[in-house]
Amino acid sequence: MNVGKTLFAQVMEYVPWKTFGRIIDRHGGDSGVRTLGCADLFRVMAFSQLTWREPLRDIESCLTANQSKLFHMGLSGVPARSTLSDALNQRDWHIYHALAMRLILRARDLYAKESTGLGLDAAVYALDSTTIDLCLSLFDWAPFRTTKAAVKMHTLLDLRGAIPAFIHISDGKMGEVNVFDILVP
Image (cartoon, rainbow, N blue to C red; front, top):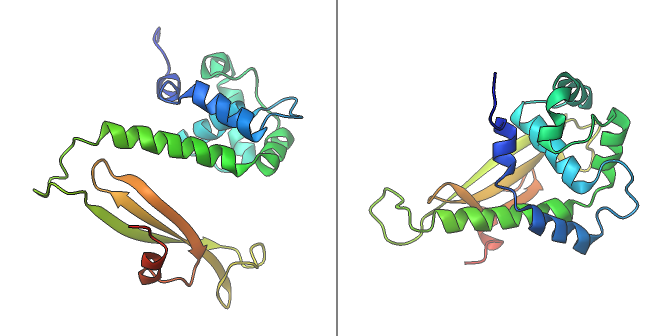
Protein backbone atom coordinates (compact mmCIF):
# COMPACT_ATOMS: atom_id res chain seq x y z
CA MET A 1 0.00 0.00 0.00
CA ASN A 2 1.26 3.46 -0.91
CA VAL A 3 1.86 5.66 2.11
CA GLY A 4 3.55 8.56 0.29
CA LYS A 5 2.18 11.34 -1.87
CA THR A 6 0.60 10.58 -5.19
CA LEU A 7 2.49 11.54 -8.34
CA PHE A 8 -0.12 14.21 -9.07
CA ALA A 9 0.37 15.78 -5.63
CA GLN A 10 4.12 15.83 -6.18
CA VAL A 11 3.70 17.59 -9.54
CA MET A 12 1.27 20.12 -8.05
CA GLU A 13 3.88 21.09 -5.43
CA TYR A 14 5.76 22.95 -8.18
CA VAL A 15 2.82 25.29 -8.84
CA PRO A 16 3.26 28.61 -7.01
CA TRP A 17 -0.20 28.60 -5.40
CA LYS A 18 0.16 31.94 -3.62
CA THR A 19 1.19 33.63 -6.85
CA PHE A 20 -1.64 31.87 -8.67
CA GLY A 21 -4.08 33.12 -6.02
CA ARG A 22 -2.86 36.70 -6.56
CA ILE A 23 -3.27 36.29 -10.33
CA ILE A 24 -6.83 35.02 -9.84
CA ASP A 25 -7.63 37.97 -7.55
CA ARG A 26 -6.09 40.46 -9.98
CA HIS A 27 -8.26 39.20 -12.85
CA GLY A 28 -11.36 38.64 -10.69
CA GLY A 29 -11.41 35.02 -11.81
CA ASP A 30 -13.44 33.62 -8.92
CA SER A 31 -15.98 36.43 -8.68
CA GLY A 32 -19.46 34.98 -9.00
CA VAL A 33 -18.15 31.40 -9.01
CA ARG A 34 -19.96 28.98 -6.73
CA THR A 35 -18.60 25.51 -7.36
CA LEU A 36 -15.45 25.21 -9.48
CA GLY A 37 -12.92 27.98 -8.95
CA CYS A 38 -9.95 28.76 -11.17
CA ALA A 39 -7.49 26.79 -9.03
CA ASP A 40 -9.78 23.73 -8.98
CA LEU A 41 -10.26 24.00 -12.75
CA PHE A 42 -6.48 24.10 -13.14
CA ARG A 43 -6.14 20.95 -11.01
CA VAL A 44 -8.82 19.15 -13.03
CA MET A 45 -7.26 20.14 -16.35
CA ALA A 46 -3.74 19.23 -15.17
CA PHE A 47 -5.06 15.83 -14.06
CA SER A 48 -6.77 15.31 -17.40
CA GLN A 49 -3.58 16.28 -19.24
CA LEU A 50 -1.43 13.89 -17.20
CA THR A 51 -3.90 11.01 -17.66
CA TRP A 52 -4.50 11.66 -21.38
CA ARG A 53 -8.22 12.44 -20.97
CA GLU A 54 -9.84 14.61 -23.65
CA PRO A 55 -13.66 14.51 -23.67
CA LEU A 56 -15.45 15.88 -20.63
CA ARG A 57 -17.22 12.56 -20.10
CA ASP A 58 -13.83 10.81 -19.97
CA ILE A 59 -12.45 13.38 -17.50
CA GLU A 60 -15.50 12.97 -15.28
CA SER A 61 -15.38 9.17 -15.31
CA CYS A 62 -11.64 9.14 -14.53
CA LEU A 63 -12.13 11.51 -11.60
CA THR A 64 -15.04 9.37 -10.37
CA ALA A 65 -12.84 6.26 -10.53
CA ASN A 66 -10.25 8.05 -8.35
CA GLN A 67 -12.76 9.50 -5.90
CA SER A 68 -10.87 8.30 -2.84
CA LYS A 69 -7.82 10.33 -3.95
CA LEU A 70 -9.61 13.59 -4.75
CA PHE A 71 -8.91 15.12 -1.35
CA HIS A 72 -5.19 14.54 -1.82
CA MET A 73 -5.45 16.13 -5.26
CA GLY A 74 -6.90 19.29 -3.73
CA LEU A 75 -10.46 18.73 -4.97
CA SER A 76 -13.57 18.51 -2.81
CA GLY A 77 -15.50 16.35 -5.26
CA VAL A 78 -16.03 15.34 -8.87
CA PRO A 79 -17.32 18.30 -10.90
CA ALA A 80 -20.27 17.56 -13.17
CA ARG A 81 -19.74 17.72 -16.92
CA SER A 82 -21.97 20.79 -17.21
CA THR A 83 -20.05 22.56 -14.43
CA LEU A 84 -16.76 21.72 -16.09
CA SER A 85 -18.06 22.86 -19.48
CA ASP A 86 -19.34 26.15 -18.06
CA ALA A 87 -16.05 26.75 -16.24
CA LEU A 88 -14.02 26.13 -19.39
CA ASN A 89 -16.20 28.54 -21.36
CA GLN A 90 -16.35 31.32 -18.76
CA ARG A 91 -12.89 31.51 -17.18
CA ASP A 92 -10.58 34.22 -18.46
CA TRP A 93 -7.65 32.74 -20.35
CA HIS A 94 -5.41 35.58 -19.18
CA ILE A 95 -5.33 33.94 -15.73
CA TYR A 96 -3.77 30.75 -17.03
CA HIS A 97 -1.51 32.68 -19.41
CA ALA A 98 -0.10 34.65 -16.48
CA LEU A 99 0.45 31.42 -14.53
CA ALA A 100 2.21 29.83 -17.51
CA MET A 101 4.50 32.87 -17.83
CA ARG A 102 5.41 32.60 -14.13
CA LEU A 103 6.17 28.89 -14.50
CA ILE A 104 8.29 29.55 -17.59
CA LEU A 105 10.28 32.21 -15.70
CA ARG A 106 10.85 29.74 -12.87
CA ALA A 107 12.01 27.03 -15.27
CA ARG A 108 14.34 29.42 -17.13
CA ASP A 109 15.98 30.38 -13.81
CA LEU A 110 16.52 26.69 -13.02
CA TYR A 111 18.21 26.00 -16.37
CA ALA A 112 20.13 29.30 -16.70
CA LYS A 113 23.53 27.75 -15.89
CA GLU A 114 23.03 24.54 -17.86
CA SER A 115 25.09 23.95 -20.98
CA THR A 116 23.36 23.59 -24.33
CA GLY A 117 25.73 20.79 -25.32
CA LEU A 118 26.80 22.70 -28.43
CA GLY A 119 29.95 24.24 -26.98
CA LEU A 120 28.54 27.78 -27.22
CA ASP A 121 28.43 30.31 -24.40
CA ALA A 122 25.58 32.34 -25.90
CA ALA A 123 21.90 31.51 -25.69
CA VAL A 124 20.71 29.28 -28.51
CA TYR A 125 17.12 29.16 -29.69
CA ALA A 126 15.20 26.91 -32.07
CA LEU A 127 12.09 28.05 -33.92
CA ASP A 128 9.50 25.40 -34.70
CA SER A 129 5.89 25.40 -35.76
CA THR A 130 3.14 22.84 -35.82
CA THR A 131 -0.18 22.84 -37.60
CA ILE A 132 -3.23 21.96 -35.53
CA ASP A 133 -6.02 20.58 -37.71
CA LEU A 134 -9.56 21.70 -36.95
CA CYS A 135 -13.00 20.88 -38.31
CA LEU A 136 -14.02 23.49 -40.90
CA SER A 137 -17.73 23.29 -40.02
CA LEU A 138 -16.99 24.17 -36.37
CA PHE A 139 -14.07 26.55 -36.88
CA ASP A 140 -15.06 28.53 -39.98
CA TRP A 141 -12.93 31.45 -38.75
CA ALA A 142 -9.74 29.42 -39.39
CA PRO A 143 -9.82 28.33 -43.06
CA PHE A 144 -6.76 26.38 -44.17
CA ARG A 145 -7.73 24.39 -47.24
CA THR A 146 -11.07 24.08 -49.03
CA THR A 147 -12.23 21.26 -46.75
CA LYS A 148 -10.08 21.86 -43.71
CA ALA A 149 -9.50 24.41 -40.97
CA ALA A 150 -6.28 24.84 -39.01
CA VAL A 151 -4.22 27.09 -36.79
CA LYS A 152 -0.46 27.12 -36.55
CA MET A 153 1.51 27.40 -33.33
CA HIS A 154 4.98 28.91 -33.68
CA THR A 155 7.29 28.23 -30.74
CA LEU A 156 10.72 29.61 -30.00
CA LEU A 157 12.54 27.18 -27.70
CA ASP A 158 15.46 28.06 -25.48
CA LEU A 159 17.72 25.03 -25.90
CA ARG A 160 18.74 25.23 -22.25
CA GLY A 161 16.04 22.94 -20.93
CA ALA A 162 13.81 23.15 -24.04
CA ILE A 163 11.74 25.93 -22.47
CA PRO A 164 9.48 28.04 -24.69
CA ALA A 165 10.58 31.68 -24.87
CA PHE A 166 7.94 32.77 -27.39
CA ILE A 167 4.65 31.26 -28.58
CA HIS A 168 2.45 32.70 -31.31
CA ILE A 169 -0.74 31.18 -32.67
CA SER A 170 -1.70 32.23 -36.18
CA ASP A 171 -3.88 31.01 -38.99
CA GLY A 172 -2.73 27.82 -40.68
CA LYS A 173 -1.43 29.64 -43.76
CA MET A 174 1.23 31.76 -42.05
CA GLY A 175 4.74 30.69 -43.00
CA GLU A 176 7.55 30.19 -40.52
CA VAL A 177 9.65 32.97 -42.09
CA ASN A 178 6.93 35.53 -41.29
CA VAL A 179 7.30 34.84 -37.56
CA PHE A 180 10.66 36.64 -37.59
CA ASP A 181 8.74 39.89 -38.20
CA ILE A 182 6.86 39.34 -34.92
CA LEU A 183 9.82 38.24 -32.77
CA VAL A 184 11.46 40.90 -30.61
CA PRO A 185 15.24 40.34 -30.51
